[in-house]
Image 1 (cartoon, rainbow, N blue to C red):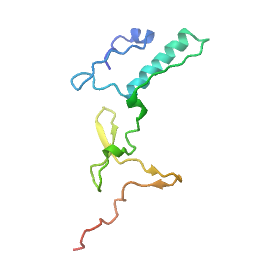
Image 2 (cartoon, helix red, strand yellow):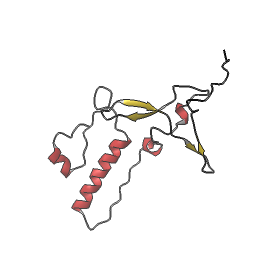
Image 3 (cartoon, rainbow, N blue to C red):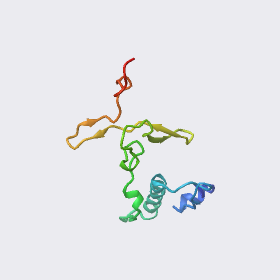
Image 4 (cartoon, rainbow, N blue to C red):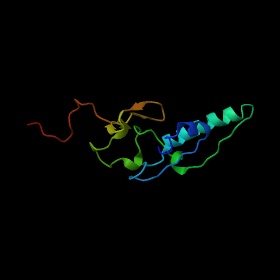
Length: 127
């Protein structure tokens, strides 16, 4: 994130200087909002310790945020596919494709979304 070079300044404000886009700092996502809000809450509590504080913001993309390993209907295929995976980020920031976490049905039962590795493939002739 841009603006983190001067650490002393960041201890006194929650401002983030951010250049959006592939050629700059990427995109300001949910994790960035949480990090900035956490810093803002720390500052406000320190400056006004005997007051109540309310942070209100409206960002439509935050309303629909799901963990990257949870199935997202808009990214699923109509039929079986080996390409439908969730995303996680490795320690050096690289994207890693992972299986989605199991779904939880309304009656609280777990629904696996993938066949086990030893499951016979449907519609394959035994030769």
